[in-house]
Length: 356
Image (cartoon, rainbow, N blue to C red; front, side):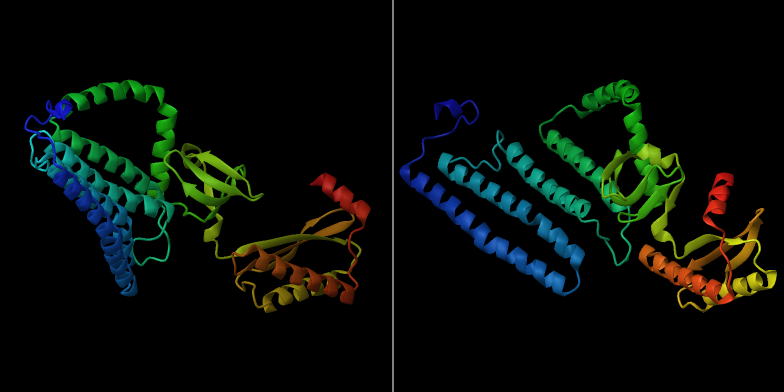
C-alpha cells in the first residue's frame, strides 16, 4: 500500500470486510452485465428488427460490447473505491483516467458501427443499390474517430494540442513529398467514390482491356478486383481514375455481331432472299431488340461476299446472350441449306483471314 501513496496519499489498508465487499460487487456486476444487460440489449435489437428498424438495431448491436465493457469498468472502479476507501470517480488523481476509459468505450462503439458497415456494405436507407461511399468513406470515418478519440482523451490530461498540431503540420509537409504516389492513390480513391462509376459487385473493364473483372472491395489506396479467371488483383486507384472504365454491369443490351463468308457464285436473288429470311428470323426471336437489326453484304472479295449479321439482345446475362446467338446461328444454317447458299471454302477462308 505504501507504493501507492505517491498517487493516493490518503489511502488506507483495506479490511477483510472491504475485500469481501469489493469482490462481491465485482462478481455481482459481472453477472448483471452478462445475464441482464446483455439480454436486455438483445431483446431490444430483436424488437427493433421486428419493427423494420434495421439501422437502429444494428447500431445498438454493435454498441453491445462497448456498453457492457464500460459498465464493467465502472464496476471495477467502484470496487477499487470500496477496497481503498477512496472514491476514485471524483478523486483528483484518478478522475481523468476513469473519464478517459468511459470516453474510449463511447468512441469504440461508434468505431464498431463503422467497422460493421465497412465489412457489410449495406445501404443505410431504403435504397436498393449499395453506394460505393459506404465501404470507402467509412474507412476514412474510422480513422477520424480514432483521431478524435485520441484528441478528446488527451484534452483531459491538459496535453498541449496546439504544439502537437503545429509539429504535425510541419512534419506533414516533409512527409507528403515522400508519399506522393500513395497520396495520388488515396485521392484517386476519393475521385472514384465521388464520381461513383461503379459499385461493389459490378463487372468493369478498362479501355485498354488490361483489367477486367468484378469489384470486390474499394480501399483507400487500391481497389480489389476479381478477374475473369477467378484471380484477385489490387489495382491502384490512380490507375483507374486515369483510364476510361466500362461498367459492364450497367448494360441493358448486349450486341451480337457475326461475319459470314459465302461463295460469290451464289445467285443474287438467293442471297437477297437469305438475308431477308435471316433478318426476319432475328426479328421474330422473343429476346432480340427490334429497333436495330443489320443483315447485309458489307464487303466483296474476289471469290466471296462477307455478310454482316448484327443485332442486340435485351439482357446483360452472357449466358442468355450466347443462347440467343446460338439460336440465330442454327436458323442461319437452316436458311442457307433451304436456299442452297454455298459458303466460302476453307482455302478462301485462309486467304480472307490473311487480308483482314
